[in-house]
Image (cartoon, rainbow, N blue to C red):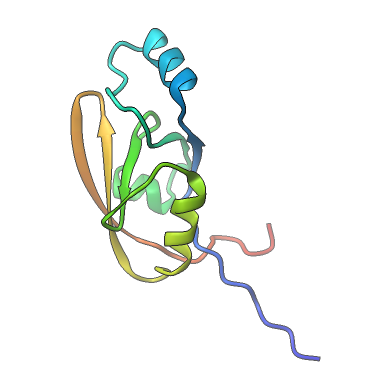
Length: 113
């Protein structure tokens, strides 16, 4: 029997789908939270990860991934799975700024985890 390794994309950040209630709570806690109606929150960035090296920050809101508007983690994962090893542009809202981040989607760091 042949065994094949499943290759998964990994950037090194934790994400959270945003909805109206979560956005309202985040704005109450932080007046600099971006003015968005949808997107995916970068909740945590792993130090030394591809996301960290590319310049992602906790609190960023991903609004576009590889040229496509995104509203859910599922959409981001679907896009990432087709782009392993390729450069992509990610647009995030950070406070009142919109920032484009270029990164390469690598394989997961430790496939045994």
